[in-house]
Image 1 (spheres, rainbow, N blue to C red):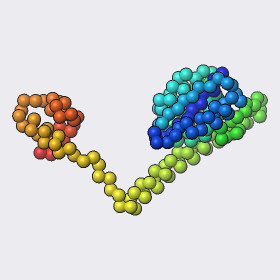
Image 2 (image 1 turned 90 degrees about the vertical axis):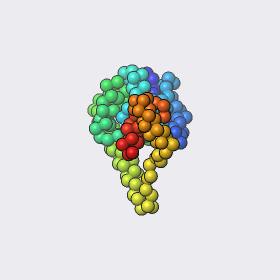
Image 3 (image 1 turned 180 degrees about the vertical axis):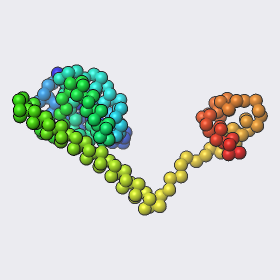
Image 4 (image 1 turned 90 degrees about the horizontal axis):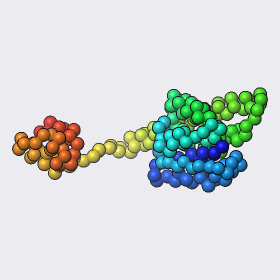
Length: 196
């Protein structure tokens, strides 16, 4: 059995490893053999490189250890159902450090009841993590709107635009050749020429 420790932060500015040493210590109550999976990727995305690697590496009976459910998922209910199925298909046991009912395995009727309770709690916490993320995004949008902020987008590179028009006026290059010569995408060439 291997304890597969998964830690995640949404951006490079955040410290994905902040809880890693605590999780390593925690994992030793199960087994000394552990593997760490660290990534900076949004929990709202189902396909994440380190999580995918963990699922590919996992074997029947391994433990997937996370600090909290929101580190594993801020997914929609449909995507979380897919992730739970992937975890189940690999035979992984999910242990959430801040959810004590997941720490032990019980057999018989007590174990069955505990599994049902854990599944409900994990579903509830995953839903709460998704809602929290959605609320945060909405508050940011409202705050920006109330402040009068208007995104201006990327400014046009007028020198490149003029160069596109100049090369096109010579009538000896394809749009693809112009794009390559100027260092822009073909769509930019068409857009600039359409604007006139």
